[in-house]
Amino acid sequence: MATVVLAGGGTAGHIEPALAVGREWKNSHSSDQLIFLGTSSGLETTLVPASNFELQLIPRVKISRKPSITWLRIPLDLIASVRECKKVIKDADLVVGFGGYVSAPAYLAAALSGVPIVIHEANAKPGWANRLGALFTRHLAVAHPVAAGKFSKALLAGLPLRVDVAQAFRASQSNWASARMAAKTRLGFASDSPLIFVMGGSQGSVAINAVIESAIEFMNQQGFSVLHSVGKNNPLPQQKGGYKPVLYVDAMADAYLAADVVIGRSGAVTCSEFRALGRYALFVPLPIGNGEQFVNAASLVADSRAEIIAQKDFTANYLKSNIAALLSKSADAPIQGDGTDLHASEKIVSLGEFAMAK
Image (tube, rainbow, N blue to C red; front, top):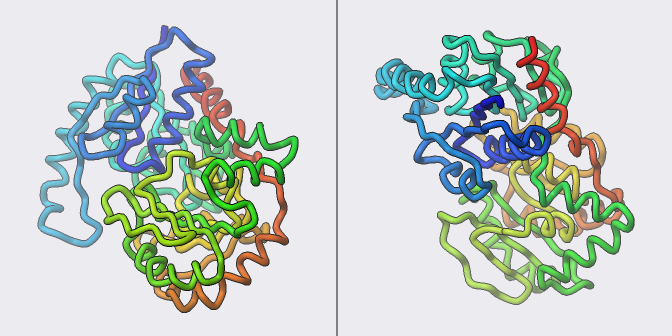
């Protein structure tokens, strides 16, 4: 029996791929012990236990995006986090990391303990934690081709899909048109009304929410249906006409399938799930970070399944002037989804098996 530690916490973008790999590992190695690392402030505190996996909490290393006096605490916080990680990792057979603040101390603890490391990079531009971890291993996997650096030679595995998204793709293959119509009906929207699905990531987006709320009256006048995921920490607007706001969408696979146009951030997981099930998207990349969200959506734009707009240009007036064109492009886009990422979890598990055998 092997012990595998998976490090990927904070946002759904790190947690969901880790959970997908964890499920695939359990499917092929039912007797192995799987332990997830996380912090008390991340979504993993609910998502990991809900998936029936063990979760061990470690101290979070807080790093502000802008220079701050709090940076003086980083070395002490990192040492404390690595120390706690070592307690979990020292007897493990493998560490699989997915980036983010949880992964960096896990990689250091694994290197100090002599435990093999596998790294999966979801974004088209590798993050700092995974670049750090790549110093200690050659067992790397990516969701997108990377132009330079160690990740340019990584296994092109794709991005592990959530169970519901993978199941929806398989179920839709026989008749995509019927599957999309059935999903719209299950969500409670009229089959003859164009549906716009709006989301701002797992936490929601204040900027995107404000634009949509300013355009509600116009959308209703045009006879459009709008499913708006505002985020659990944001106020819930009033439902009006075909506009349906929710704090969170549980049936995400149905939302991707049913939507004629998806409007949202272009995080790696969103792009991957949309690629599998979606029709056409307008992506509004997060304007902070290292620009990875602009790059994540590039292949979808190249395939004529999406376009990108900067947040500063995404306004209610823009939406009113362009929504008809977006719906027209959706009608011309392929009816079927794309199964590129369907076997990503299996590929990462195989890479992990290879790393342990070395």
